[in-house]
Image 1 (tube, rainbow, N blue to C red):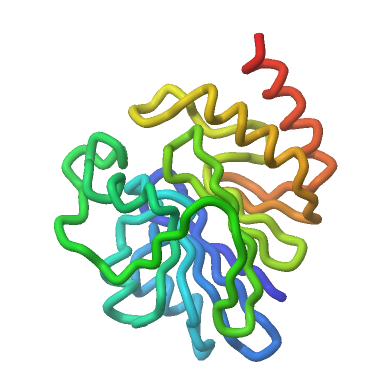
Image 2 (tube, rainbow, N blue to C red):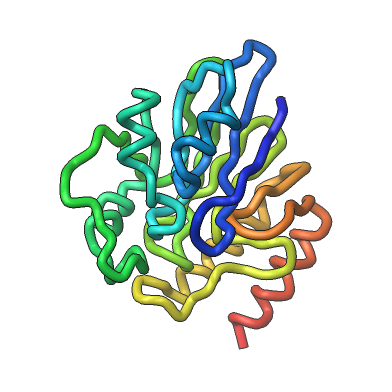
Length: 204
């Protein structure tokens, strides 16, 4: 499995293209302009889009992706409200006015998209709609975990107690590599330390 990254328009959001040995690919986030994503995808067959949460920098071009690639989109159930509320998606005046063909996932579970086996985990705290996706031994964490930090919990919709519960949950999930919504990638050993530090901090 190969992971390619491109930076989106706002806040250098990381957008990913995950490719398997059948030349299928999954997209993670919708924050890069469509033409840039099309160049990144090339001749691969896009089979789905994963949205880690509905903040506008991650979802800005969601409508365009859906219209062009015509593939299923997967997001947390709570993302349905956040996408339509600019006060929750941090988008100033940006919001989705219409219903889009999105599969909203509840809680934790697993799914198969194309030839990809995916585990998903509800991970609120930074936003009520945060969701992490694990594919093989890679965790796509959005803005929940960063290389050396965690997502902000001072935004509208953020919740310190929910973030603490999320960190407790993630401390029990193993993975080899972590890709975040911003910044560089990380690994399991670093994240064990990272999570431990912020669990202590939030428990003060």
